[in-house]
Length: 131
Image (cartoon, rainbow, N blue to C red):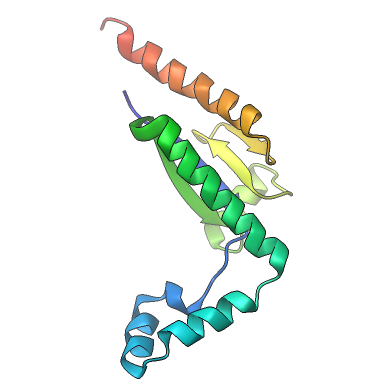
């Protein structure tokens, strides 16, 4: 069975800690902890809450679907995020793109799981058919 790909296009928090080279520099200078705290404090509370909620959702999806699901995060401000927003006409975030075909936008777990179940079951049925 081939795992189902889900791409999550969302607003992501970017910090200096995201850069490996910056991490080395800040660690050597003893600044890494202070820089990270200041970065996170600079974001609006709604973005922080959205990030936490999405993180919990992703952990739950990985627990539910295990090896049957591959999750890819796409920052809406990246070139890929801009392209996907245009291609799939995404205006609201987060948006979940399943197998590059169908999208779901919003926070209703039931609808997202229903969409994922359909693709996982289709993937299983393809595997069961004799060659």
